[in-house]
Image (cartoon, rainbow, N blue to C red):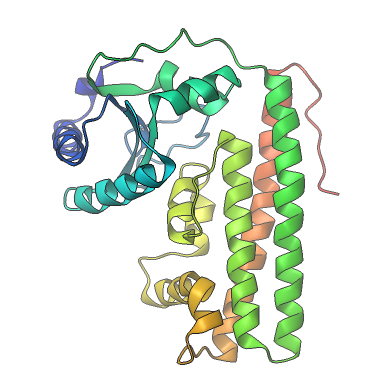
Length: 294
């Protein structure tokens, strides 16, 4: 890790400093590490981002490490941190305790080892020292990624096909719930193949934000700066609960058809992202770089 965030533009440095202060008011963090966002330029050593997003995204990604916590506390603190930091700029946070990080490192986590190696440390209480990061076993990373995409990609296709059938029998609410599940599965697949990590949530808005560093095209499937696109995404987001339980939940056939097309596009993009990821990992491990979706 390094603490060289002072090299960034003054406005960015001020935002980072303010975010640090907000996080420390929420929780007694052991370490706060900046590992992604708009300040990153395309760099082959940054394993989560193969594109230059600096002109597109105005958000940061932070890993907040605690001394001790539970999974439930992590989720609650994550929400609180993101909400309070939104007053400064939009951020995506990951919160875990040091025990969890050490367990993941012992399993050979490419995600956390890369953050500890390349991330920019903006706060360090000095109470925990992590072991020296060793190079990841890329063949094992590839094996796990292939297994993850086979599972989550297949699941996404099944949910989408089921939603398409429900559209033909006019079961709009069921179709929308299934589209939510397909979308959640797609975002999960993308996160797993790129990071080997996914947050514990059904919130597709959070999952979408976690995937933004992978490809600009993912962000453009639902351009939330446009009212119509934002409206469609909010329908999909609420479908996880409202399509099943809220009597007043009403959606038109046109809206359902637009969402079907959106999820089809999202799935096609995830296939392309998987091919690129597979070939990149193969190349890094010295293997042939040819793959086709079966």
